Length: 324
Image 1 (cartoon, rainbow, N blue to C red):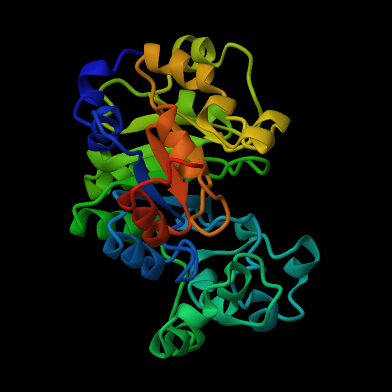
Image 2: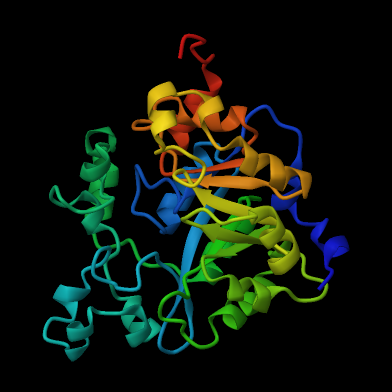
């Protein structure tokens, strides 16, 4: 379907296609270094750091409410195992799709972030616990942080005059109606021009490619794909391509030895640029990745997903060391 004229109104896509010295910074699940991921608290911090957009993940509850959460299970980022101890749904791992929204909204989605070491993507895991204000730690432990609905997240995005990448988490469970419900919420909140929808299941994008759409569509890839530019442009009709750092060459023998932009897979970005398709790379963090962010910028990457938007902004504000 040709929606080019409508897509030209999309602010996220226009920003990615604009002439910039540095990539667009997208706060991955919000400011995940300093707040529980995929919460309104993380979104607000990401906005305050100056990230130009944020990324969130969407699952569908049993009663059809799109909520903002990364995992298929509620276990990692809530107290579901305690609150619903003995519930038979625990045998299947407390899956989101097995719970109604009124049950999910009772869960504490903040305490895990400031809990004991070992919690994946917690403040201690990221090494940022000691950077948190005591008042923030107390608040995250208070039970006052909840899983937001997609509607709440989009309303916040609109109120802050911001942009958002909505990742549909349909694989592997493929809950019926998830694409339709996401589109309904985008329409109801009148946020289409601020939204970039992405998915690892590219059938989701085909299902969302409606005549006159004002939202943009992006394919997610964790492994290389032959003739990616042709696939994205001609088969899927994607507006953007989102690839892992590994796809772009960060773990290759050559890059480990050279640590330069010339060791990355420039040809991927070039081929997609020729089709007018911006490339975004996930997930690049200030503390762990050395000069990878700068090298990605040098090969023309349009956007970077980062858990650490504040640190990443500082990296691009500093003059790069020409010796590295």
